[in-house]
Amino acid sequence: MPFDPILVAETRAWVKKAKADLRAARHDLSAIPPLFADAVFHCQQAVEKMLKGFLLWRGVPFRKTPSLEELGEQCLELDETLREIIDRAVPLTEYAWKFRYPGDPEEPSPEEAEEAIRTAASVAQAITSRLPQDVHQFQQE
Image 1: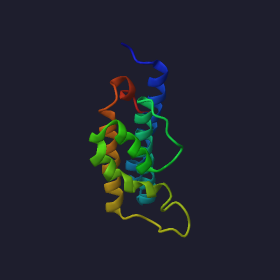
Image 2: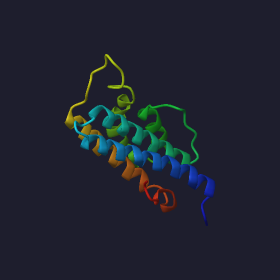
Image 3: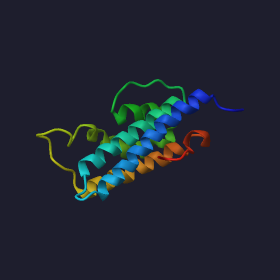
C-alpha cells in the first residue's frame, strides 16, 4: 500500500532540513578557524527537526518549541526504544540559545562540539531507521 504522498513530502522536508543542519555542523568544524558555537547550534537544530519529522510521520501534533525534552517525550510515547538516544540528546536543547548572543559564554570546547555532532548523527540514524525509505532516501543538495 503506497504512503500518502503529502505526508511523505512533509516528513521528507523535515528530514532533509535536519540532515542539512547536521552537514552544516560538520562544515562549521572544518572552517578556519572552526565555528564551534555554530556547529552546536546546528546540532540542536538537526535533532529538533528529526524529532519533529518523526512525530509528523506518526500523526502526532507538536508545539513550535526547541525543547528536545518535550519533543523527545512525545517520541518516547510512540517508541520507548528511543530512550537512550533521546536522553543523550536532551542536553543539546541549550544550544538553541547558548553561545548565540553577546554576553553569553563565547564558545563551546572542540570536544563539546564533536560530541554534539556524534549525538545529532546518532539521533538522525535512529529516527531514519524508523521511517520508510520513501521519506529518507533523497539526494542532499
